[in-house]
Image (cartoon, rainbow, N blue to C red):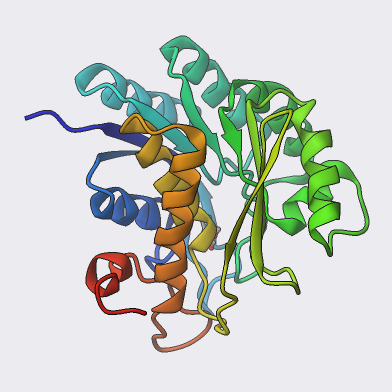
Length: 269
Ligand code: PXL
């Protein structure tokens, strides 16, 4: 039996809602074969100050080759890359592999406030990684950081940002307006046209892992051979279910629920 294969290169989120854990859960739900390269371990709790533990470049490279040589992949996504050196090495590995379906989620700050990308790594992400991307998926905060714009409150602002980001080399830009006042509207730009993906605004604070799962779902659909518009549409539906049926646990911001679309698609109106 053959199955589309997808690799995530991202951080481990111990609490299970975001990062590698969200990606692998998403891959399973989207019925693709998931693999991982762990760049760093994020484990924040009240007893630690330093909740981020970085992997060596050697460990990152070894994981990449294990996935690439033993299995191979049809698509990959990147999430938390943390440092300049990791981004440079990961970009080099992606180039070497020749994989076309590269989804770059420019993760910067976690829902709990952890800094997941160092300030001095942004330029490297833009210069080394963005040109390799089929799509980048910034949220409003990330779009502001990447463009230097001060306003990102409307769909028009998002379209302006998408035009600017397109010049950095990705084939598509997806600006995610999940926190937009008008509703959860995302804008996809291919250098010519804009497509808006709209969904209802869901009133919950339990959205940890939403961005990770969205980009993992896009990579999964691209691996199946869908085009970018179809892939984003399907992934948006998937993540909207996951937010609508979010899980709240002991404390803090809870998790998007990856099994929600499978479980509820025939029940929700
Ligand atoms: O949701 C962003 C994110 C990405 N990657 C890792 C994280 C988080 C948020 O906590 O921990 C590893």
